[in-house]
Length: 374
Ligand SMILES: C[S@@+](CC[C@H](N)C(=O)[O-])C[C@H]1O[C@@H](n2cnc3c(N)ncnc32)[C@H](O)[C@@H]1O
Image 1 (cartoon, protein in one colour):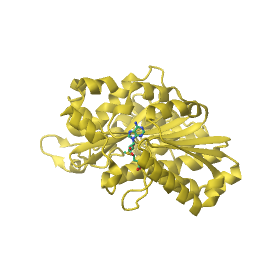
Image 2 (cartoon, protein in one colour):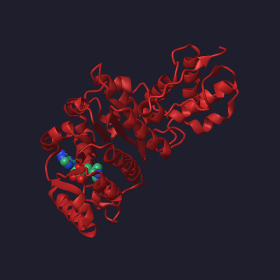
Image 3 (cartoon, protein in one colour):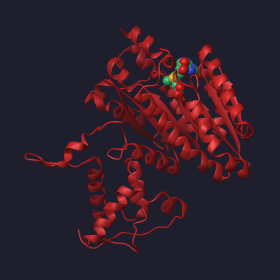
Image 4 (cartoon, helix red, strand yellow):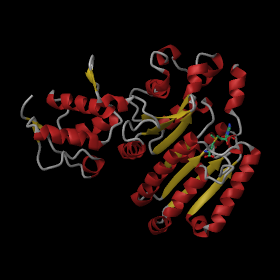
């Protein structure tokens, strides 16, 4: 049974068209590249790097672009800025399967022939290596430069501590891991799984199955050093009966802000899944036994309100950071703070509570929320 699952994990995905769940994952990768590339090109770093360690063939059977081609497309959109800012852009793709590597090389060559100006704007290297070897080879560059790293593995193996904790040590890396989280549910107690990624399956199984990706991330967070700045966020993806997901990791609030905006744009009910993970759609109605259940956003806003009124959130820095820690947008905090001002509970200078990345981290403009009534 277990061996069968391992062979399933290495099934050749590109013999088939991408399914809807794969497209959702690719769109998140792509949306994040779209946000990341211009930010770092304009930021003034002399060199930025993008890594796609499990790059696949370039296109699926029907010619739909996979992650490497989507990265090239997003870089193409920023060509003028790349030339104008004279930023060096290094792109690294890796694919282990020799046949797929060939296809990938052809796909990239064709793309660069069609858009030769992109070939002048970036340096592209393509490897045909096992991830472990390629990761070790490229790690010095990940450590040195602002980097965007994609780890679109089949299965779970490469979530092992030796990779995750290495990424944790980098300071300018944003990464997106793909994990087949439901494999943990089914096989997580097996020795072979535990030898890759050690998790407490009893703990994970205390919560319903559809929370497996969330539970997995809660346990990964606990593995990070106590003083780590790395933040991890889940995005669960339902594929038939299985739950897979993306793990986003970054240590800079600018990156977290961008990821959360990408995630909430895809799902404005929970910002965390391609389905209604907390059954928020049913929470609008009054339940005769329990009253009205709070949606994810309402429950966050209730916690924020309590923290403002008990004095643990005193200004826009606290409010914005609280939103990011809870995987919410600054705008979710802002609408509650405005409501509290209208209700006469708090006061602050001006019309906006300034709970945004720009006001807090860029302009460093601090405003205090004064409590008027509790
Ligand atoms: C989920 S697919 C990636 C799909 C790709 N991101 C795309 O958009 O088409 C995972 C890929 O990793 C490759 N792979 C499997 N084991 C690997 C390993 N040990 N090192 C590197 N690549 C591997 C597989 O051949 C497969 O193409």
